[in-house]
Amino acid sequence: MPKEKDQIYKLFKPQLSPKKMLELGVFGGSYFNKSQIKEFPKSWFKNAKLSEKFDVSLNRFKVKSGLTRKEWIDKGWIFKEDPLGWFQWYCRYSNGRRIQNIDQIQMQRWFNFTRHVKAIKKNCERNDLTCRRRQRQAILQWAYNPFI
Image (cartoon, rainbow, N blue to C red; front, side):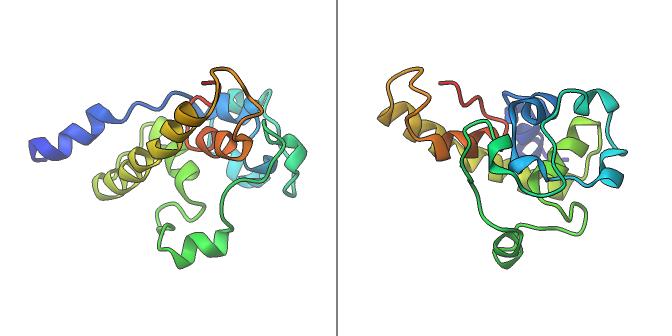
C-alpha cells in the first residue's frame, strides 16, 4: 500500500466507539436487526438504546437527523460490503475488518463530516446542547463527540 494510502489510516481517529454511540442513542435505535447484532460483541448492546422501528425518542438529542436509506443508495453511499452503510462499516472496522478501497472511501466520508463539527463550534456557545441539536445528532452518528 503506498504511503499516501497508509496516511488515511493514521488520520482516522473517531472520538466515539460503536458501543458508546449505541449507548448515547443513534439512528432511532433501529440500525441493526436482531440477527445483525449477533455479528458484534454482546457488550456493545448491553446498554444500547434499541428499537425494532425508528424511535426518535431514543436518539440522544431527540431529533431525526440524516437521510433515508433510499437517499443513501441514490447518492452511491451504500456498498455491497456494508449494505447498511457507514455505521455498519465502522462497526466491522472496529472489530478488525480491513478492505482497503472501502476503508478509504468511508474514512474520507468521515473526514468530510468535520464541517459539521466546525459549524457547531462556530455557531454555538460551548456546552449549549440545545444549539444545533440536529447537527449534534448527526455528528454523533459519525462517531464525533457531540458534547462540544
